[in-house]
Image (cartoon, rainbow, N blue to C red):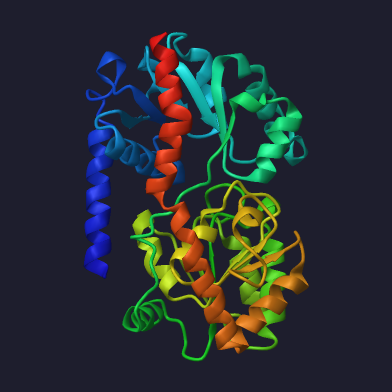
Length: 372
């Protein structure tokens, strides 16, 4: 399994290097469709790679990713987040057609979010499409004034080949390698939930690290708990676990593909956020055969049916999260039913389907308009 993950990582890295070559996709040498990413190896870069690879499988040599969009002309240009669009848009050629993905954010989230939304709304005449992943966000954008004809809802995808249910051997090896003690209920949280990019001792409350700690505290009073963390800026959560005496492992992963093995060690994954655009962890958990418990944020209400393929609770419902986690911990049949139902539905979110939706609902119509 490790060899397969390393091989996948090398392939994707090669693809990224090829597509992002400064001489290969800029200006008139670029493909017709360009997905804009930041220079950092963050989540949006992987989204762009999966989407453009899927589009190229449908229409060869049509799409690529770039981190230098200002050089593009007479192209379809898709900004992978609204923040990149508001930074770059005013510098971009009027000869392009533009789309932007708006993951999450509302004026109540603070001055920066409010200003960003205002800028996106001001730029609507230049945008062919605003893409969002969740019904909740779609409804907000409509209420804020995005025209229905410009709004497209496409979920965030998942690589169902990379994220898959482990064999018993893979599961045991993952728990051993990640130091999960025998007989412990392993809870996963793989995100950034602290302010900044250092220790993260100041909590990013929108991600609900306080809710996570309260839920873990309730669970650990009934069953032995071990917490598996990845992601930067987790200091607030780590300090909280240490105060409770809850053992944990925290690793900052160098490569996105390494995450699949971490899911293999879990008994449950908790999403405790107050606001999300996805999160990807919902579909990654389902595809990995891990029960998902989540607050009612982002795509969660679109995907998770409470008690059927996961657990869905109101924001800040600590009791609901703990209650469902304890049922998973103590009722193997219940846990297995959630896992199977999740596997039955998550295939619809494979990146191949999500790429097709981008092609049919966004890129092909924009290419047609570009020709007129």
